[in-house]
Image (tube, rainbow, N blue to C red; front, side, top):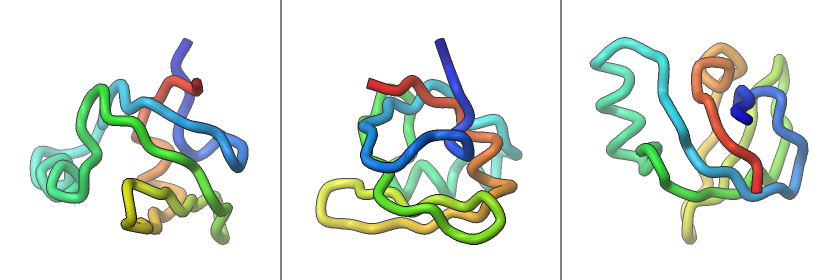
Amino acid sequence: MTDSLRTCPLGVEIEICRVDLTLRNRFRLSELGFREHERMRVIQKAGFGGRVIAHGTERIALDGVTARHILVQVH
């Protein structure tokens, strides 16, 4: 079952299933590591539905609109 990254609770490991954004935005997110089958951890909720994601040693903050368009599977 897939969920939107925006609805994921804190502390869970996620696997990216699909990024449903424009090609330009998908490319930029891919550069940050948001690729299909990539695993990350949700570490913080940000304002207006945003999330902060841990990917290796990196921390990436996403706004709520972007997070809504990233479909993930919670592990």
